[in-house]
Image (cartoon, rainbow, N blue to C red; front, side):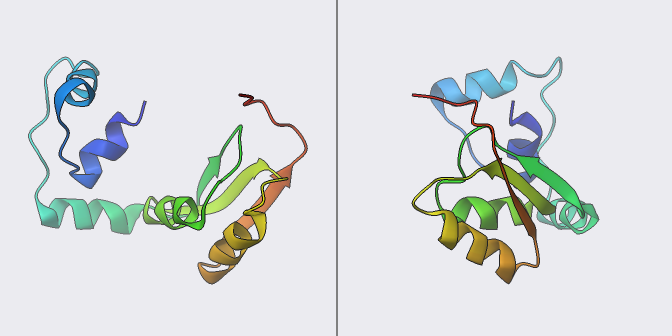
Length: 105
């Protein structure tokens, strides 16, 4: 689940998404202050992020970087691979294409 990421980012949730998120906790945590979120973000570095499908758009790469990702692994073959690699290069991230795609429609 993305419970930790949603908590740290401070994203406001509504409806079923909020109910699902709250169900992840025995006690719903108090929101972090802006300063606490910023402090947490500065501690995130050298995080690895993998996908069993493609990184479909460069904004996924930019978002991963905000969570401290330095290493990305995903199957290749998307029409957007070049743009995603370019975004990773802009952040000094390692982007490795793996030969196995586990996510199928």
